[in-house]
Image 1 (cartoon, rainbow, N blue to C red):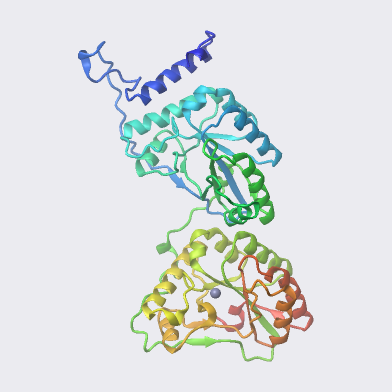
Image 2 (image 1 turned 90 degrees about the vertical axis):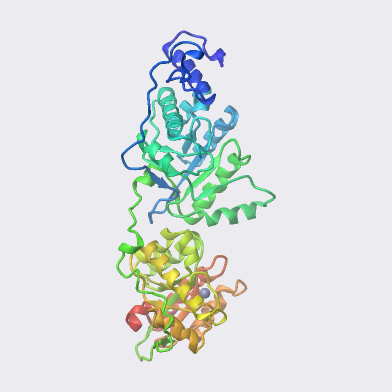
Length: 484
Ligand SMILES: [Zn+2]
């Protein structure tokens, strides 16, 4: 470290001082405070500068951003060796990605040239704590000093003030959020995917895995020191984003467009579904199709899929000017609320298909009601409004008791279908799907499709819409056909 102190320039001097300060802090004695043990041990202590707990608001905690824009952010932790960092920056340039680098203050002090190069290439520099640690269990004062000193080093060496803080693991507690605010940071940032080392995955496995995490508003995280494939992963991530039609944007831009979400209890209709043990008297309304001579049909989509699949379905419907009905599996919605909101924003019906997709006749009525109420709440919170109060039982299985149990929760309309091309079967080609639909559909039909990955529905969908229209059918959402 001493070798850094060559010239006598103020810059190098600061550099040396910051390293000494850091080392002292890491060793447990604050360089700013003198010695609390007093006269036993060296010179008289300077008056300790006590750090009071911050009285203002905590910083935000961000692991993903609430937005339906087709954007996500790429972030890194740590500072690998110079060669790796250089190759990483070149690779990011190649794919036109601007990323956020969470940098340990210690490493910035050691190799400020790397930090400056990151800034020069248009990336963000953020606070990764002094020595990329977790800071868990540390007293407030210690955490404060760690974050403050890291900010100072980054500011002095790069001229940039970090907006965000992130610990080694991404974990944080309320004190860290308070410390971040105390130091002027907007948010403590974790991630929607922390991408660790691959094991024995093939290229196809890696692509398949990454596809799941190409989410609107997602924050991808990698550690430049830990992840041995950090360079290779840039290409994989860039291609995965291109496949779904999403774009990596700078983290602060992603965060800036994030919307505030109302808590569940503030959304009107959040309690429209309730547990109800007195279900014997419930009056379910079972719907298969509408008795009508009007040439109208409804398209419905069940279950859940990746952004890639669902966004493609939304784009086809949008291009063709069709509104449809979506029955969502809420465990998927829970992990990816932005995608559910994108469906609702596009003007489609968003309805309930349970939380975890159990066969309704194989679970107790109370369990079924729990599934429905939980799904209702998750979907309501995700789309920030009351969903369409239609329920569709997984696999279409029901009996009298399950119908009553469902209706008693508030979901009186149990909406089945009469056209079943079995598109969930990967072996069914687009032609098979189109053929079945065209053979089975009549006026008032409800067509069952799925938004699962790797099936042929996306190929079949535009053909189905065109052929139905050429037969004189109008495509309407189920709410238009059956009311709500
Ligand atoms: Zn299903």
